[in-house]
Image (cartoon, rainbow, N blue to C red; front, side, top):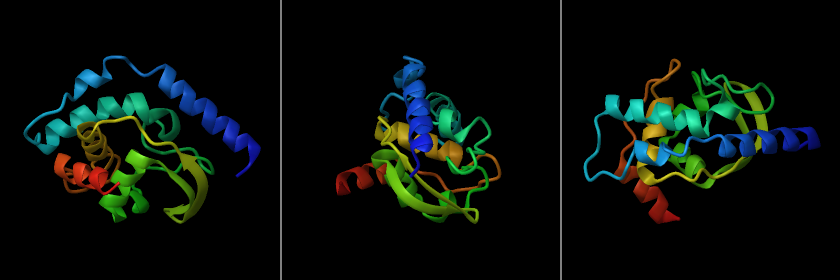
Length: 146
């Protein structure tokens, strides 16, 4: 990893934390029942705006060489469990997304299981992606695995 990349990623991450709307926690209060996919996508879009937009951009295009795209992403769509783990625990190291190699770091996101499901339902069903629903139970199972 290069020094400029670390500076840019740190600044973008800190900026996203500072400018996160304080009412995001109210968007998806824990629910006993799973929402339908359409409802979850709407909630996920708002969460995305607060937590993901700074690095992955408004249309999920990412930043070439720095932050991978989520739009039409072969990597994102290949493994739902891995996507849950990366949002929950962060990720570091090399990954190939749509044929381009990225070698960076994504910090863990401070989201509840429900928020993780919503944001993944949004990104996995936007910008040319078509994915099956991510359920609260699936996210909880990943969290329980550690």
